[in-house]
Image (tube, rainbow, N blue to C red; front, side, top):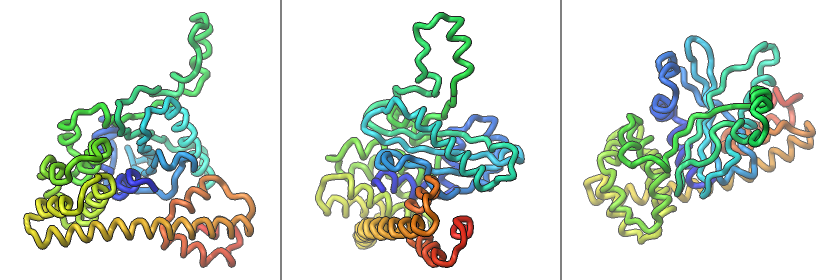
Length: 326
């Protein structure tokens, strides 16, 4: 998993932080009709395996006006604006609906899906915002265009274009302090590898201290500091000084920095351990059950070590994939 993905997921898999962002991005009618305590993260990923170093995704369920709605969030962090994202997003939404049909074969309708793209990078979004924008209808007689256009796929998506947004706007949208810091770090730290970590902390000091004071924000603070350490090219002492500035206490600041370094080491070890176990489990599943659905392979590859261990204990006794992943 890429550093940017890990930072995004570490915060926005928490419904509290995800809800604060979605309240900003979703249409007002949906925000008002949503039962926000029902926001739930669903397992799995729908991104193509070859694009996972440039994209990351989260799928949520949310009750809106008494019915379930799926909210699909795609993090885009390519160094260029990919003109085909709208088409890729259509494929991912189709995969979500296919997974729903497999899980609910008795259903007669599909749930609504709200696609959201969060984009950060050196340039603002310039690619198509709908699938129809990618269909070549130019140059055809207007009556022919009018006849063809309604027959083409035309999925739209909501766009959070951090690259085109002033820093002040990102800071004052009403997202939680941790969510705001993550979005700021994704957009501005990535673009400044030579930046001074003390300067970055001073720049957003009220947010850093708000996360530090939040009893549930300690892990998020460690992940953010670990992200800075992996992105910025500077010496250890400047990072220590940055953490002291957050903590307002020298000994505690040094302790926080050491924990952040250890968090980074443990993250790397855990990712390597999970990846190895996932590939082994997939080989066993292929041997026992044959070809696997693409979304199931993605689910295994994105799982943590605990889930992989649970599934591995079932692989010899399970009589079906449904029994394996119950």
